[in-house]
Image (cartoon, rainbow, N blue to C red):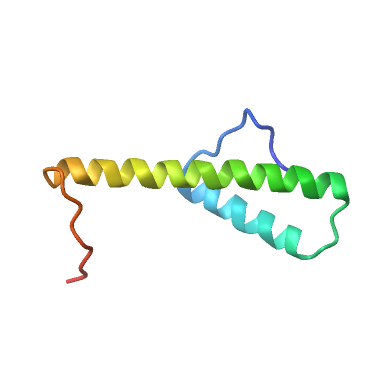
Length: 75
């Protein structure tokens, strides 16, 4: 079911998609306990991956905006 710990997602989008699928399977309540635990562990890894990617993007935006993070406005 869950991918190996050493198998990081290819991208933020891939991690988010895998996380959404994993949450759906967990929410069914039909997984055996061992798969539930493995799914939870994989979900925690994917969540950390996504948060780290978002933080890296935010840090890059700060660099590009001379150290300040400006509010997002759609034009």
